[in-house]
Amino acid sequence: MASEPHLLTERERDRREDDSYGDLHTEHQILNMGPSHPASHGTVKFVIELDGESIIDLDVQVGYLHRGFEKECESGTWYQAIPYTDRLNYNSAILANTGYCLAVEKLLQLETPERCQYLRVLAGELSRVGDHLTRAGAACLELAAMTPFLFGIEARELNWDLQEVLCGARVTSNYIRIGGVKHDMPRSFPGICRENVAKIRALLKDFDDVVTENRIFVDRLRGTGFLSREDCIRYAVTGPLLRAAGVAHDLRKSQPYLVYDRLDFDIPIGEVGDNYDRYLVVVEEMHQSLRIIEQCVDWLEKSSGPVNIDDPRVRWPAKGRVFNQMEELIQQFKSVTEGPRVPAGEAYQAIESPNGELGFYVVSDGSAVPWKVRCRPPSFINLQPLPLMLRGALLGDLIPTFDFVNMIGGECDR
Amino acid sequence: MAEESKGRMEDHGSEALRRLIAAMPEAICDTHARLGDATALVEAARIADVLHFLRDTPGLEFEMLVDLTAVDYVGETPRFELVYHLLSLKHNHRVRIKARVLESAPEIDTVVSVWPAAGWMEREVWDLYGIRFRGHPDLRRILLYEEFEGHPLRKDYPKEKRQPLIGPRN
Image 1 (cartoon, rainbow over the protein chains, first blue to last red):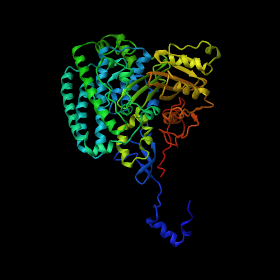
Image 2: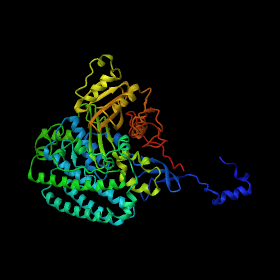
Image 3: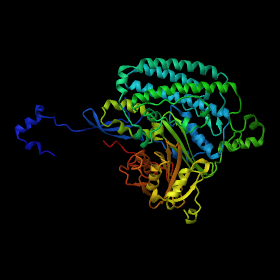
Image 4: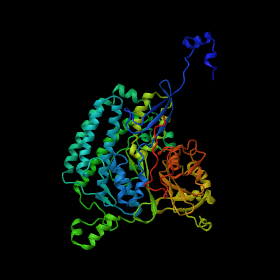
C-alpha cells in the first residue's frame, strides 16, 4: 500500500496525476450484473471483477428460481410429480416428463408399447427444436439482431402449434404418463406436421442466410467462450457444449433409449469449442431433429396399436368401463387418489435433453409416494465452468457465452 | 455394513465392480446391480481413494462425475447416503458409488480435486442436506441464501415451514 495521499509532496502528486509519467493508477472494479438484466434471459446474478473491460474473475450466483422441486415431489404421488417436471425447462417440458417417467418405469420394470415410444420420441424432438430455436434466436436478440430472432420465434410458434395439436397444450403440456402417453395423436396430425416442418425448414434457411456468415455475428462468436474438450469432461459438461468441443457423445446414440436406435440421424460435432461451433452444432441438431420427426410421423401413420401399457399397476381403466362396472370404478378411484405403488429400490435414467444429460435418480421405499426424486440438471452443471470460459475475455463476450450455455432458470434452480 | 456381508461381495458381471473389489476389498461394504445399475456402497472415509481409483485405472476411466446427490434415510444409522454417478465416455459405461455418513457427524471428504465438477454439486448437497465436505474450497450455500435456517431436503424439515424475509444487502 502506498503512503497516505496527503503526505505526498506536491511534485510527487503532480507526477502521479500526469499519465505521461507512466501507467495510470487503476484498480479492479466489482460489477454486479443481474439477477434481472435486459441483456440476459434467465434469472442469475454475476459478480464480475473487471479490469477496464476485461473480466478478471466471475462469481455466478444461481438459485433465484428455487421452488423446492424435490421437496414437492416427495409429498405427492408418483403421478403428481409429472407436472412439476413440466416446469423445469419451459422450452422442452416433454423431455423432462419423459426422463422422469422412464426412471419410474425402470423401477416398475415396465416396457411401454412401441407406438408410445415413437410418440414420445416425436414429442421430445419437437421440444428439442423449440429449445434450440429459442437459444439461437435469443442469442441473436441479445447481440442486437432483431430479425433472426423473429424468424426463430415464428418457427417456434409453428412448432408449438404442432405440440398443441399433439398434446393439447403448448408449453407445459404434461403429455407423458407412467407407462404411456396421454392420448394417441389426432388423425389430422401427420398432415399438419409435414406442412409445418416444411415451413420451419424454410425459416431455418432464412435464419441461416441472415446469421451464419454475418460478419458481426461471426466476430462476436468466433473465439469467444472457449472451453476445451478436457475441461468439458472435468466439469461434466454435456450436450451441445461438449459436442462443440469435438466429443461425439449423445445419449441418443451412445446409450439409446426409446426407439432412437431404429431412427436415422447424425450427431454434429464442432472443432474447437467456441460459441460459433456451439451455434453451428445447435442449428444442425435442429435439422437432424426434423428428420427424426418425419421418420416418426411416417411410422405412426403406417402402424397402429395401443399407446398405454396394459398393466393394472399404472393403467387407468377406460371411461366406458368406469361408468358401468363397480370394480373398474374402484380401480379408477384408487389410481387417482393413491396412484401406483412403486417397488422399493433406486434407479437412474438419463436422457439427452437440448442442454445435455438430463438424469432422474428416483428412490422408492415401496409406497405410493416417492422417497426421493433427484433431477440432474444439465443447465446447472453446464453453468459451473462459465468463469473458466470468460476469464480474460471482454465483458461483452459474457452475453453470447451465457446464451449458448443456455441456462434455464427453472431447471438450474429447481 | 455388517462384517459378514464383506465376505460374499459380488461383481454382478460389472467390470468396474470386479476391479474395485479386487483392488480395495476393505473399502467396500456392499454391491448390487439391480435394474442394470452397477452400484457399490463404500466406506465414507475412503471415498476419495475409491473415486481416484475409478477415474485413473486403465480400462475403467470414469472421467466424468455426472451427478452427486444425497438421500436422507431418516431413522436408519447412518442416516445420510451420498450418491455419486460416474460415466466413462471412452468405454461408455456407468457406475454408482454410495457412501453413508452419520447424523451426528455429517461430513465427508470433498472430491473437487478429482473432478472440479463436484464444486457446485457439493455446495448443493451442503445447502439442502447439511452435509459438510472437508477441504471444499468454497462451501457456501448455492440455491438458498445465507440467512436461510436449516436444510430443507432433510426429511424432518417441514414442507410448510416459513423463513424470515430478508432485505437486500447492499
